[in-house]
Length: 413
Ligand SMILES: Cc1cc2nc3c(=O)[nH]c(=O)nc-3n(C[C@H](O)[C@H](O)[C@H](O)COP(=O)(O)OP(=O)(O)OC[C@H]3O[C@@H](n4cnc5c(N)ncnc54)[C@H](O)[C@@H]3O)c2cc1C
Image 1 (tube, rainbow, N blue to C red):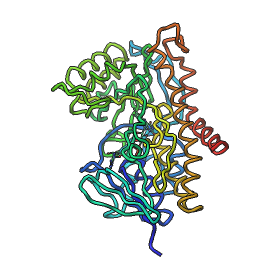
Image 2: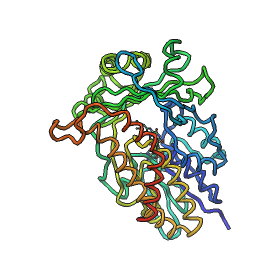
Image 3: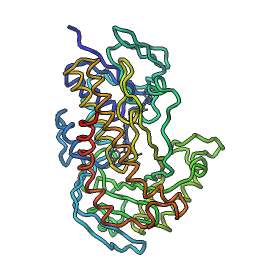
Image 4: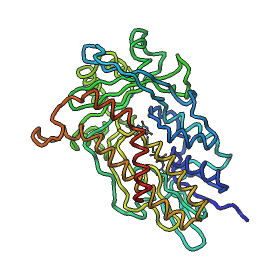
């Protein structure tokens, strides 16, 4: 019998987990990515969870120290460079690029196609057809929309349902380890670092280098800085030098020099000089606006949404990549056990409850920041500074939270 064939739209981590998991149950799986060039070097650091390590192991990718940088100490720095608190932890900091590369290299020749932008879908009882902007068509048994928070696939089936802006952005910066001066290197590289300017959250930690190196000397240093930002200010940040507003995101290359200069001046003013020094050295810091989205449905006949296309959670649980892996595993296992129709129904029910649970957790974790946008008397969190104990409990309890949300979704979904 011919192998069943999945058409996977989106070639980032969600699409690659889906393709690798479906291949592991005997399907043929082809990924279609709209970018014409290989996705690489996005550089962004990510936290990882044991649930992610379990899925990658199942695919034959051991999540050992070649996948990230182990960290055992957390420090809190004040504006005078002083480490005013220090805690033990166990964290493995990886990067989008490292996880992506480990999945991408497993895809056989010809099964990952670049420059393919999906525009529409046709389905009937015997299969599904994907139609691309270049006019080409592909036929398969199942189509997976792993095309991110602004999913085209979702828009085809749930027109007009869009992620909601949460009221803050994450500024991101990165510097190669070899460019960090020795005294700063000594203070930062062994630790996960927090700065807590009033109403904001600044995180910094070492990650694999731009070509995924994990050896000392070749790593990189990654910054994520959450800052309340009004919709008007976001629109200004997203307006390029020619006056064109790009919506709620802008390609980093088009970010105006005055916006970059302002962000660097803010770093000097608000965070510890060691990390401000690193932020300033990145020639191209960029920002990502933070959104929430809970999809009311994730299955439409032979179509399933997965990863950020299905549920867009704020990054605080640090589980976006983990959710991609868990969605892909559940989808493949359900189809292998029950066939396409009943398997997809189970996927929608159970992973839907899981995805919605993660979005709500992200909203709870981020409420400290969104509260700062309200008048003081309406805030739930009256204090402007985050308590170290609360932050440590939330951060180090993340994997337990993810497991709790998973178990709850299996009971209720
Ligand atoms: C500030 C920040 C910090 C984060 N930190 C973490 C963390 O610590 N840990 C973690 O696990 N996660 C983290 N995440 C989340 C994580 O990056 C995402 O959840 C993950 O990348 C989602 O993967 P995806 O494949 O679903 O979507 P995406 O990565 O958005 O990929 C979608 C792909 O689909 C392609 N595409 C779009 N439309 C089409 C089309 N019509 N046709 C063909 N292709 C198309 C796009 O080009 C893109 O390559 C963070 C996110 C942010 C914003």
